[in-house]
Length: 182
Image (tube, rainbow, N blue to C red; front, side, top):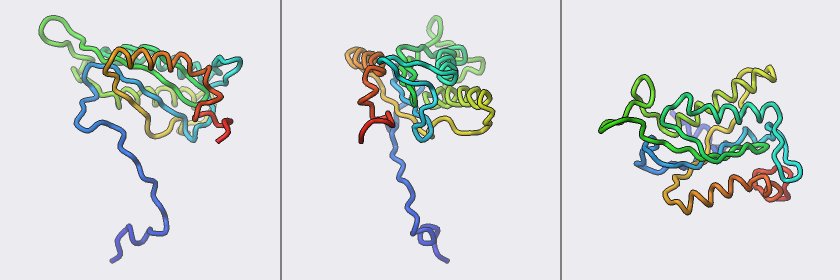
């Protein structure tokens, strides 16, 4: 019997690169910078005009879903974020929630959720609402993965905040911009 690999050797499977830090607890308190891109980098959320991001109705939904994350996850605090035509950048802080010597549970079940769960929920909440408005249930809005960076120093946090705030100004040079000359 031939192996699956041998039977499908004429097809090249895309190589997925592991982007998470090995043995790192992504539910522990700290700051995280994330970027989430739309499926095939389609510009779904609005456009840049005069160096400002002008959100369409889908972009408003994305921004609202982002802002509502702390309502669903008690230990999540949000910092700088920007919705761009085909991606979002944001900083998320995970904080210990509690009183006294023991941290309080982060939700009614006492479970502390990792960053991947927060991003999954954000993508799910926003996709459902966007697809409802465009009457396209189940259509992918987001790419499968996302980029994350653990922020470990105040200097790094300041630079990332500046990057996020200036992102619309740099759209013409942004590698996510489909109109950019390659």
